[in-house]
Length: 104
Image 1 (cartoon, one colour):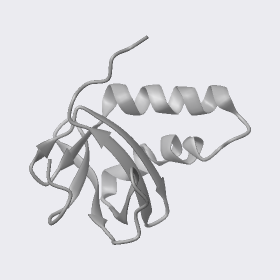
Image 2: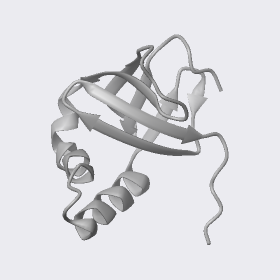
Image 3: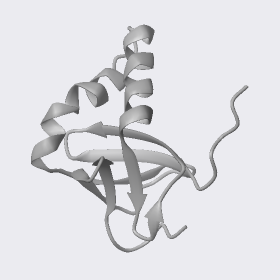
Image 4: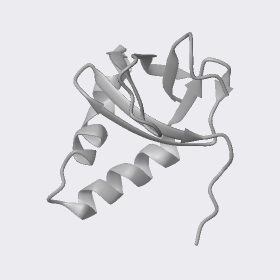
C-alpha cells in the first residue's frame, strides 16, 4: 500500500466525508496529515471528538465501534482493511492495516 502521493479519503458509503494529505511529521507507525472536511463530515464529527475524550471509555468505545461499522478509509491506491483515525480540527493521525486484524 502506498503511503505517498494523493489523498486518503474518509468515506461513509459512497460519500466522501474528508481527505487527509500526508505531512512529513509522522511518528511510525502513525502517519500524520492535514485533514480537509467535506460537508458530510459534520454528521460524524462527534465520533472523532469522542475519541479524544480520555475520561469516558464507554463513549470512546461507542465512537470506535461506530466508525468501524459505518466508514471506510481509502488510501491513494485503494481501501485499507483496518484503520485507526483521529481527527482534531485540520490535523489527522492514523494507522492502518492492509489485512483484517484477527479478533481475540
